[in-house]
Length: 403
Ligand SMILES: *Cc1c(COP(=O)(O)O)cnc(C)c1O
Image 1 (spheres, rainbow, N blue to C red):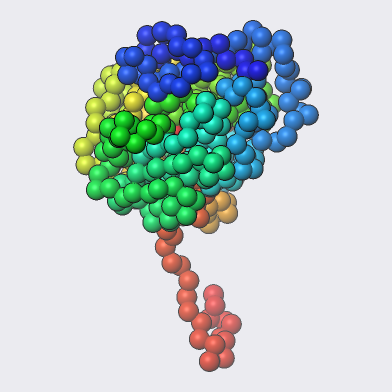
Image 2 (image 1 turned 120 degrees about the vertical axis):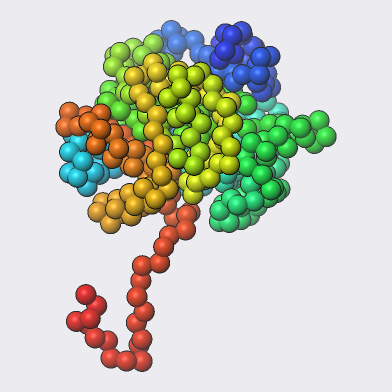
């Protein structure tokens, strides 16, 4: 049994029945899963969680599957909150915690969304899924579909990092590189529905990935002892994680597990692709397609987001803001955090550090703040500059010269 009551259009509030296959609402907007929160409140307490396995499936009452036994699993650990003493010291901030999502299966937090989406796809009897990806989502789709016995088709921009593309095809997805960006690949998926009878599993175009991403918010609240930090810096592409966390906090508030204090939600994008930042600055509800998008932080190279209004709503409701950072700046922060803290960030995670530096300089965060940054993937999946020297073993080693 699940506590899901219905699906709801995020724009009009129109209801759709649970337990049915759905993509977008009739008005072309994302559907959100709604739960009987009063019943959840009676069914489970925060202490009950302590007896459950340390994985995000422990929040089963807040998840959409009919039967928890249906979960498609690859070892979904709870991800650690790593303090960055370096950033606390150098920026004068009370507490800086990095939530390291790179520990999840397939090395990124896309595993959260796809584990739940693929679980639901299998419960609903779907047999073929397709999606556009900049890399990590496709890898997670491929892996979870392989585990679930579902066919997968993945379409990547042709400059997607090679390691991601190989990972996707190696885990069994039919994998295509296309000469366009992620939104162009998304069009291929959308237009191919009839010919290929696949289900479109694009970000926010089906209701369940957001429920998986929501677990970041549930987990964060539990790890901090059922309170929230003062600010969350989130590298934002499609925005599923940010929207999901905001939804999680609302649900936890309604079941009485959190008080009214909410973190400022801070959108971090790249200067080469910053549609949400521009819309936020313009006071707009929607973000037009960003032209000629470019950034080395592939996960946030998303020129247009179907959930743009939901991202902007969360930023505004939370008194947050949106910042764009340069690739140069994020490469520099990735370097510094690796050398000073021993934490290897992905470029998208490093972007949140750059945004934090800007915020500290502007006086928006300081000594009384506790901030959480999201490192959404393992740094090991991305190219790193060489920093070594050569040693000729045919010569005696000059140890003094090693430095
Ligand atoms: C997908 C992705 C993002 C963006 O996440 P959204 O929730 O879709 O905005 C950020 N970083 C990495 C590494 C990603 O793979």
